[in-house]
Amino acid sequence: MNASGSVRGLLAGVFTVVLWGSLPLLRRLAGLPPLQVAAIALAAAALLAGVAALFAREGDARPAPMTRKAHWLAGVGGLVGALWFYFLALGRGDPAVVTLVTYTWPLGFVVAADVLAGRRPAVAALLGAGIAFAGIAPLVAGGGGGEPTPPVAWLAGLASGASWIAFSLYLRGAGALPLSGYARLFGQAGVVALVLHLVTETTVTAAVGDWLAAALIGVGPYGVAFMAWGYALRHGPAGLLGTLTYATPVIATTALVAVGWSAPDPRLALAAIGVVGGALVASGRLPARWPRRSLRPGSAG
Image (cartoon, rainbow, N blue to C red; front, side, top):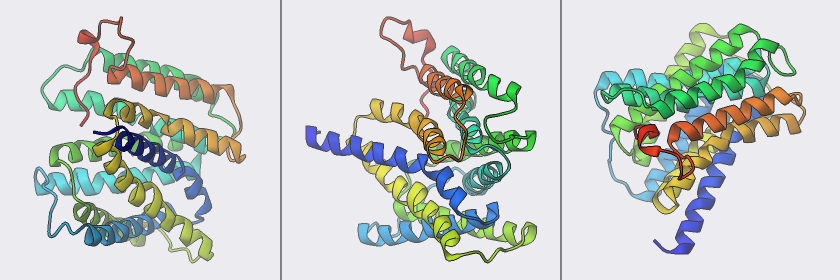
């Protein structure tokens, strides 16, 4: 791999993480019910991935789910749940607090991957989870940051994280998906979200800007971000890219505070440090002088 290709891969990774960090901002701009936003976003992501697949000339490549049941429960269900519960939490509590709680999910993924592989959870994974939740504890004890964050918002954030774990475990078992595979997955999840919206929510006909913001969630944090991340993984430095993903909740929280949608609070900074530090410990990215052999978690994908 040449140096320029590696740099472009790294830049693609940075771009992806910034797009992921923009998700709560875009959600706040879309004055629509959670499932309605999810359905619009997933439809936009499916359309973008489908068009990209045509230009990529992938043919009729299909995803290879572990089983059809796993595909629908963990793949489609996990994706719908991740968006639904996250958007629900953002509407009920302080968005910065909700984002930090939701993004503890990579720690749970490391533990779940070890358990499903028949291994005992690594010491590093358990230690990392402890560090992350210790960082968040002052927020819980103090009732959250600027906006009130009731228990339902905390629970919805954790449910979104659990859904991301299920979706990530599905992707790990299914292997790398082509763009056409993502288009099908997004499309199926969009139909499920639409049906749930029609059954449980009242459709809101808001301003065009609300619909555009919902569509941008699918185009940016899901559509373009997935494609950029794929390019980054093929061409960029894998270790550094993995570390970059832990910056997502910090970027999101900083942006929310900067625009005034979350109040600056030292507990937010402590929670961000705890989440990122815990994720780094769980991933095994420790100083060379540490005994990494006994702390190294199983591969996350």
